Length: 214
Image (cartoon, rainbow, N blue to C red):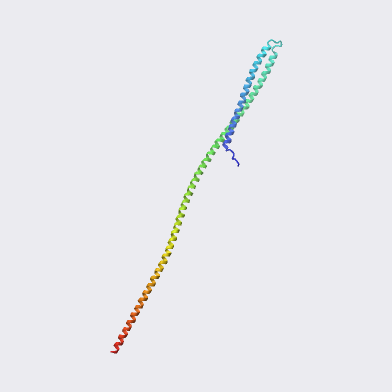
């Protein structure tokens, strides 16, 4: 499984700590060199005192002591010169490190601003996502309610259609029975009317014949 690289701000802080450590190291070297020089000076004093004590009774005079002191002086001058060069190099390095730290500080501030903007963008997008999800949830709920209402209306319409069909069938049956009854009534009335008409005609014919005989 691959691991993600550390974020940029961690690299910046690590580089800044390393630069600060590097800035302290030259000062440490200078302090150590001063301590060594002080120890050498102390040893030189001890040697000079020993030489003075030992050269006081000699026949050669102070020439060996002077030569030895000149050699020690030249050595110390060389060490001091080297120390000054080291100090100057350390100061230059400190200046360069200070410039690098200043650049790093600017970079860190820029990265912090970028991180702040990215966080604001992330928070804004998160709020938008939450709002969008909420609206979608409400719409889904509304769609479910509408679907249920449509299904209920379809069931109700189907029931009404079936009842209307049954009522139409019942009405047609009732109408047919009523028509049949009316037809029977009309037939009966026609039969009675025809019977009455026939009886009346026979009576009139009988009366007419009876009148002719008289």
